[in-house]
Length: 137
Image (cartoon, rainbow, N blue to C red):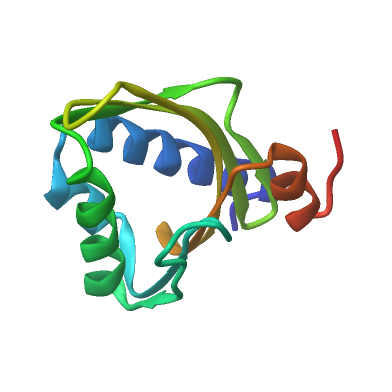
C-alpha cells in the first residue's frame, strides 16, 4: 500500500500534468484526467457558476472559458499543494485576444481519487480556497 505522502505527491503531479496539458491546448489529455462523474464549480461572481456535472459538462465549461480568448495559459504562482485528496493550485490565468489582455489570479481546488480529478472549484480569493481545504495563510 502506498503512503499518504506518495499518494499526495501523485495527486500534485496529476494537477501539474493538467496545467501542462491546458497550456499545450491538449483537450484530450485534459479530458483523460477527469473521472466520468467529475463536477466543476466556477467562481461565485461568474454568470455560469455551475455545478457542471459529468466529465462532458466540465469539459464543455472549460471550452467556454477558453473560447473567451484567442490564446490563454496558466502561470503557476507557487508550488501546488496537496492536503489528503485535495490539491490547491494558484495560478495567473493569462488570456490574449478578443479585447484587452487578461491576467486573472485564481486558485483551483481539486479533489483527486484513484488518479482522476473528481471535482474542481475555482476561487478568486486564495484565502477562501485555503479555508475550503481546512488551511489558512
